[in-house]
Length: 101
Image 1 (cartoon, rainbow, N blue to C red):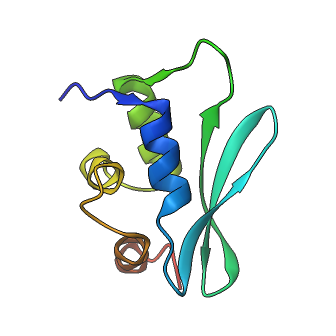
Image 2 (cartoon, helix red, strand yellow):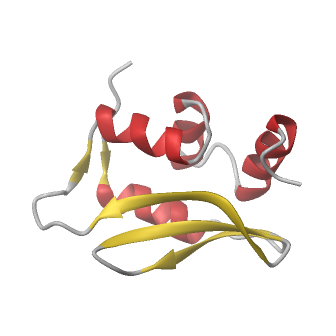
């Protein structure tokens, strides 16, 4: 499945979906890092988005890499970016996998 997203769409999904006990927190650096916090605690689930000026699109390869960084299937990650799921849904997935306590 060939999927491409605008960088802004991915960043908006990662930065904009917050619930009472689950959210991604944005950390700036040479790349923007999004770290998942659950119940106020930092988790091991994170991904990067490049800050490079030439990186306006996130292609299929990068979608696969981001999915792996987040311990998600590509379909689960794309559903999150497409606003079909929320942070609490990701927490449920990670709990089922034993990644999140």
